[in-house]
Amino acid sequence: MHLQWHKGWGASALEVILALAIISLGLLGVASVYTFGTAAGRTSDRQVVALRLAEELLEKIRVQNMAFEAGYPPAWLQPHGEVASEEPVPLDSPPFRGQFAAESGFLRQVRMRRLAQAGDYRANLVELDVRVGWSLEGRERWVELKAVHARP
Image (tube, rainbow, N blue to C red):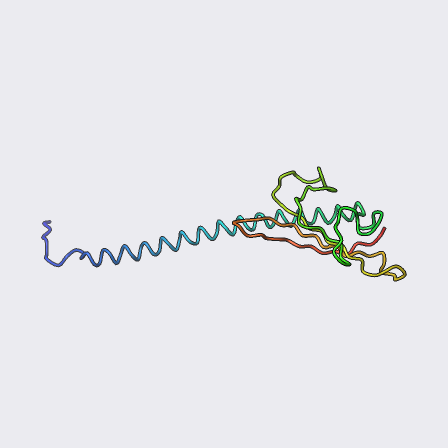
């Protein structure tokens, strides 16, 4: 069998450029999906760790009955109006030194608020608000848990 060359077969330069443009757009789409997926994975991973740490922090406050230690608010909190709160500090700062991995990169913020004054049946209840945060790609992100703790 003998092949003959016919004029008009083949692709023009314009067709080649157009085909390359379409392929490059497809590759850019795949690259952007990969980049977005990787970033979402990192965010999700840190969010799961922060949630676990917030649950652990909340449980430590409840088990150690920190909301009802001598005086209100507890000495390790700085009062801001009627809500005892602290500025964001490293997770392992006192009174939790040695209870969390040092240099985890996470911050904590704890707020406590009594639900009523003395004489009310709710005076032995404290609302706990625990926030654990981290910085990722220049943005701060926080996980927040709330609970009510009763004096044992």
